[in-house]
Length: 402
Ligand SMILES: C[S@@+](CC[C@H](N)C(=O)[O-])C[C@H]1O[C@@H](n2cnc3c(N)ncnc32)[C@H](O)[C@@H]1O
Image 1 (cartoon, protein in one colour):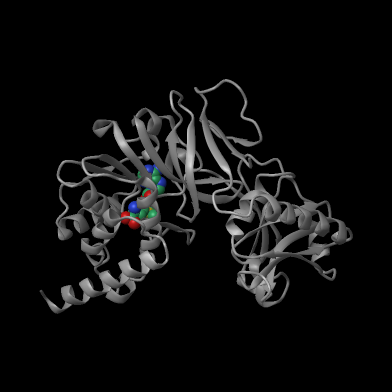
Image 2 (cartoon, rainbow, N blue to C red; image 1 turned 45 degrees about the horizontal axis):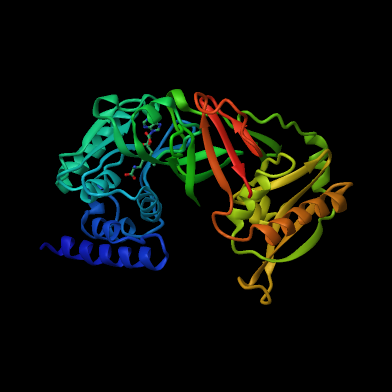
């Protein structure tokens, strides 16, 4: 073994140990694959230590607008998706979005009796993935240059389709190319958030039911399946993000004025330890809400609380708005408490409305995977889904809190 290979093996073991401790790796199959595939072969110019951290993306490709269009994903996200997919030896798997490393992990798991196809829309990524797979000894992976909106029919049907790019919808080709008992793992975008969802077909029906969902984010889909979210600027450093099919409109000058009013704080008494679950509840219950996003400057200048930095649902009522925040509170199980900050002439009422929603969530749904998520392809049940739902191009996504 060379000194580099030796070092990489030790770092790989440490990475796997961390991913186990963090709960991202839960099966021996995924642990074994991540213990042997040389991640550094897919990012040869990146420092070895960085390659084997669990939360680092590698080899970013940036477009003319400064947006990331491709990365080798962080290993904790790859572990989460592989565990969601429950890939078994002998399976035929399609990976949407390439980089090489994740396809090599899947190839390890399916073994010589299975097969792996990975598809990317970008020829640079396809070339890079092929080179990495060849360096690491996984030439058997089929690397295809295409828009995955149409799937890869030549190697179908697939037991698993693992989507590693932010998708706004589930195109019919993926369902047509999935075996009857197949599973789709997809970072699905709705209400301006993403959830990594593991979908199985409901028995005897084309409807897809989520077995679980997790937090995670990916670069956006390009090509025919691309989505078009809007970010409505309240100030140059603060904006409201809405889904492409949202009908929300805002009185921006009034909201800008509201920012100059003193914030009204209220506290819920509930722990702040599952903000992603609370976020999903707020966005799929009651009034439609945008996601409030702040640039670092808005946080540094105390225009908004720091928890807005990564986005948080905001309840907007004309010229007033409220959003969720946290503060230290040693009396809660997590050491933090969830609260609300509101601005504007009706700050008190809007803040109370949001606080009540938070308390309802805490009282009835304070657990992981509390929501029941279903995707109804347009060809499926003619009946409208019950509860919260959003209409996509090819189907309807519903999120119900039973
Ligand atoms: C996060 S990267 C994939 C990471 C990869 N799975 C890995 O090994 O870490 C997402 C990729 O999706 C690709 N992509 C975006 N839109 C696509 C589309 N419509 N069809 C196929 N690939 C697409 C991008 O070019 C990018 O390389």
